[in-house]
Length: 141
Length: 139
Image (cartoon, rainbow over all chains, first blue to last red; front, side):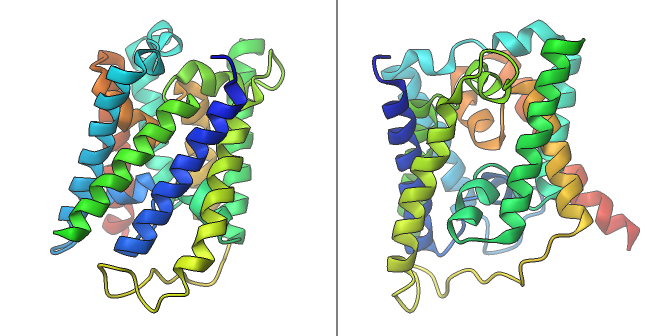
């Protein structure tokens, strides 16, 4: 990539646009853990748009695999750690995002955009423990 | 029907944004979280771009009385920091630092067909389910 920061900004802008579209059209917050997690305890009449949103994510993934094949560069960091690490990481991400009512998108983008104290605190917390975890894994152990 | 088309488009655009910004490659995410190493600050600009656009459009959207295809806008309880929020965010960050995936990128990357992503995403959904079931049992 010749201009990586521009790509980051552009990609981020698209995410912000997506969140704005979902709010404008559907009156929903584009927090991925909430949108998808609620399908695990589905409420009648509140299922279809969530499934379709997830379908859009997957369709977008297929489009990316076709247009930008490098965007899924094999998760080397993951394969190196084996299946146990993958399972542990996935469980923590899933459990933590629901317990904390949001993840990078819900708190980090939608919440901060509306100036929510909860979301600012949550974002600072998960970035801090993420940084600490990578520090321990890469530089200590 | 129109509300389903907008939901689909929103998901699609979200995934494209994740891919273009580099969020779907865990190596980029871990490089961003590795502040003590060769820090890769690019992902900071994903947040900047996303927040700038959404923060600019949100007030315009809220000028409407209601969304285009729905009865009302979401309402939020008073902004309160509690132990559940802190514990959840802390655990989520640990998992994010171990795997390099947060929920959006993990689901988007399923399209790559990589078995590691399938394992991660399955565990993630199991974790979400547990978080929803455990509090209900206590009551």
